[in-house]
Length: 319
Image 1 (cartoon, rainbow, N blue to C red):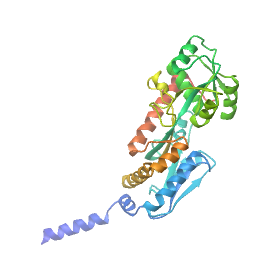
Image 2: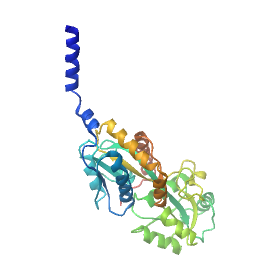
Image 3: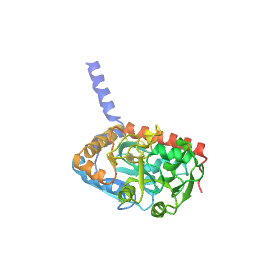
C-alpha cells in the first residue's frame, strides 16, 4: 500500500512540474498567429499571404500578415518575440547572407529557430547579343583571353547581382571589371545598350529581355536543371559546384519548442505540396523546396560558410 501511495505521489509531482514548453506545445495555437515580413507586394509578402490563408483552417486560428518597410525590423521583431509559435518570420536568404557583409542586430543562427525552407528562385547569366559566345564555357574562354576587358553589371556591394558575378568570376578564374549601378533597372538598361557585356540577373527580369532578343542567356544559377528556366543549362555544367540562388524561409524565435516547430513544418509542407500552390509559386519565380527544419538550418550554415570564404578570397569590402 505504501509503495502504491508513493507511486501516485510521484506521478502527481511529475504532472505538477511539466515544463512550460510542453504546456505551450500542447496548447498551440491558442491565439492569432502573425507572420512578420517585409513590404506589401514583394515576394515575401505574397508568400506570407499564401501561407496565412492556407494555414488558418488547419491551425484553427486566424493567421495575419504584418508588414514592415524596413528589412531589419521584421527580423528583430521575431528574434525578440515569445517562443510560443505565434510569431513567425517569412524572409529571404539575404537575412542571413547579409550578415557576412555588414553588422546586424541579430545572429541568424542563434536568434532564430528554423521551420522550413520554402522555395528558391533563380538568376540567369546574360550577355549582350554582340558578344560572340553562346555558352558558359565559351564566355569563360573569351574572358580568359581578354583579362580586364569585359565588364559586368552589379548593384549594391553584397547584393544578388554582385555576389552571383563575384562567385562566377572567382570560380572561373577570370578578370572581369565590376560596374556599379543604382538599381537593377539601370543595370539592365546598360546591358541592353552594350555598355556592359555581362550580368547575372533574376530570371523573371531576364527572360522577357532574352525572348525579345535584347539579351542572350547562357546559363541558370541553380545547381541542377530547374522548372523555373527549363530550357537553360545550369552554370554548374561548366563550373562544377556553382550555385547562387535566393531562398525564402520561415523561422521562429529562439527556444520555440520542437513540438511546435514540427507542427508548423508539417502544415507548411502540406501547403507547399499542393499542386495549385506550386503552380502559383512557380509563376512568381519560386520553385518549392520544403522538407524538414534541418534542411533550412543546413542551408543557412552552408551559405554563411561559402560567402564568408568568397569575401576573404576576393577581398570584398563594403563601399
